[in-house]
Image 1 (spheres, each protein chain N blue to C red):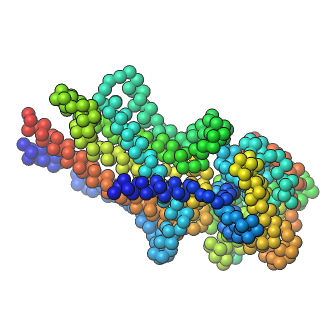
Image 2: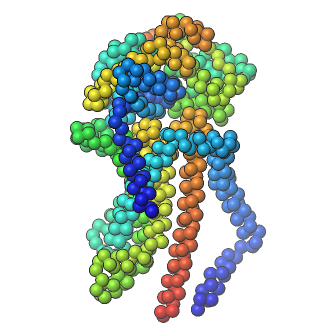
Image 3: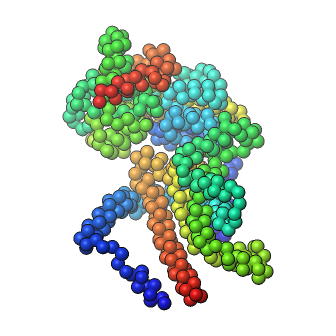
Length: 293
Length: 334
């Protein structure tokens, strides 16, 4: 049975002649080289071409360290929030029917549609000194914008859809048969979630979290509007890179940029691994299904 | 392991946010970071010696008008150090964090130093640029930041306009024609002074860059002195760089004393020396005499000739005012 599936996978699905295929593949590779690989290499070249020592100095400088630290803190706070929200939203949308479901789905997509700069400005309008809640916040000495909470808020906003968007199609495809079986067999709601739903979605969930993480650490627009750019206080890595570049400090700018690039490469590797695992799981699921028939 | 790591991260984050000693936040514009990098440690040392109190100064830099906007929106600056008095006026009017009359609280209308617009040309001056007139000639490319978003660009516009007025006996129509000819030669309008410098030096666009005298020194330090020449035009504009204490913030934080000391120290001899070393023209006559060699004496006119910056803003740079009309004319001709 399984050999039949493999044969199907390997079957040639194009009818174009060989040179057309090579030309198209070549063009695609060329574009990728020019648009993606050369810029990526140039980041590392600019960062390292004056020697390892300068590169290291740029990264252990106190403003750079605090930018790295702030970026990690922001990601560490916003990711769990998005994880819980994303699972809850996907669970509600995929497994239940209720009024206003399509509105909820649209709302989850909103951060994808809104420009990050606008997202930042929304929070300035709400929490700024002359915003809706600005006076109250100021009287109670609560700092939101131009401080860490504002940066976290903006980051949560822009990374909101990643986990939910990843899980909804997966959970919808899986249906709720297994959960229903668990419930019939006497499992509590929590047990059902922990032992049935979560193992089924874990790779999809991880995939969503990885994407959200990449965006959280790399976000510029929304965070730039809301940060206030205080050196060593409210600068994340992307903001710090811009400042260093404007100071003509190209080596340090590209050194910090290389951290972001490394992170992107790591994300890519993780993503490919997770994708591969998801595929493996899908094949196994299919096998089980076929064997069951 | 992961939990321990994240806990450590959050704790270290908190420790970075809490500080016991006096802190000041100085919200400033783009090209001043080099000056304050030198000035802040000098002031902290002086303040510690005088009041035995350790003060930490935090810096925020960006386009002058954008920074003013952040203060209006609640960025809690103790002091603002800008390149145009209109940016501080905006905080007075729109945010009300600074009280009116801020320019009377310190000498020289609260501007501890000044700069002026100079012309920067490529090595050997291949286009033979000597003065403002050469910028209006056909075939010369001029790099200037956008006067709508940058104080640097506004000073350039006013400098060109004022120079033309002087040549034509105060004829406004001629001045407008002349300024339009210069801006018609601008290939890219960058948002700020730093971006314009990058366009000229890094991307090698244009024959002449118009920017502050102190920015020229920064270019020399970063790109090497042999790569360009600084041309002093026959007449230029005196750009006063004003400072102010943000009343609302210092009253709330109780930092008025240290904030006032911080700005006052700008007028002290050591403060003026640091300014001169960063190619900002000092007010103190003794310091000015000491550094006279690096500041060629040229004829200057002030913004007072335009009835002050507020009047100039209204006449030239508000929406639909002369600059917008000129930009529209240039676009039409292209």
